[in-house]
Image (cartoon, rainbow, N blue to C red; front, side, top):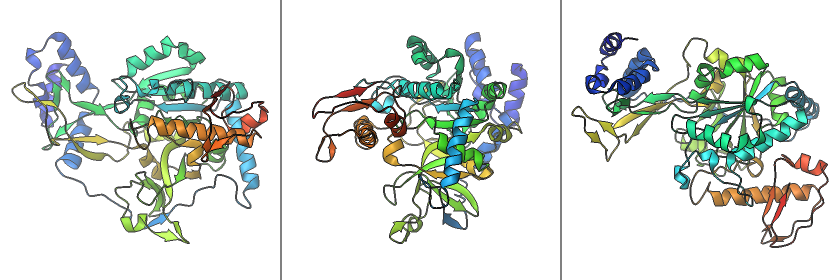
Length: 468
């Protein structure tokens, strides 16, 4: 696109101010700015400015909100055959190469005090393996059992794409086949001033930020990842985020239920820690399965009980299974038709004089899309209950809840439980394991696998144990 055409297009939507410094830039800087603008859907940006920035759209809650009825973790009476068939079907899908792993890994470790991609953060209790290695070793084991390498799609961000690729190269992809790892970048969205003008972060750059985890579904299409899946015959994706080392990267039962029930998008939930826990709430809204954010669910519903238990007790943990055909359908019109979410933030920007302004209060609007907003658009969406202790202990904060300390504690607790289920005596002190335990995912990725290997280990208080 010529600069004259670009100027004309920007002027037609009232955003030509982003080229105010263009003539003073070097050719390299000019190319950078033009490339950024060329990557944007300018018509969409104009529409979003009108709809989401210059006005605040009201939170559009369903008129009728009912609790969801998730599938239980273990089969209820009458579900035994379905669960047995589902487990077999999940194993079949993996053996046939029909499932890919989808890791959302665009975040940085800044809040953990780590300067680099969050996936590099050391997280296991003894060997201090980074998150990337934990997932790679799990996928190794699932691939070995399936006798088929599971393709691994990793979404990075503009800021951490090159470091992530370099890290994988440095560590020889943790032994995973390089040809079966597909990196691609998340999309970026420009920030707006409160009056709807696009902001410049530098004279030669828009003020950009990631377009939300919902944008991952658009990035899969634009990056060629969906085309790669089609070529490989991949029909389903197992979606998980980089900060949770307890996740089961592949769960044959969950995948089998997802496939057998004809679900286009399935989700795992955990019972909430309390009525106001800051997690999304799965519910039935006007007849459709959906997630209502904790900040939007009316408090009287959040606290509602039935038989002494919370009525709305299905907490979202960002673990999903998606049909590849569903993701393709969402992108079929050239735009990912998910709602946008508005957030007012402090965004540094270059003003009309070229001065960098660092605001002390929110001055800008950022827009994001959320992956769970695809659920109401899916056919037969399935919700499945898992255990928090088994599968959810994210590393988000340097201290307190969801910190490295709580995550290591939860890994040790789960490892102890797995060993006890395998018939191993685990000495305890005040209810906690009396030693640090780490089980390599190369040895076992589940309690069931561990038990089948009949481990022989004697645990002694205060003596660390690494099982590999």
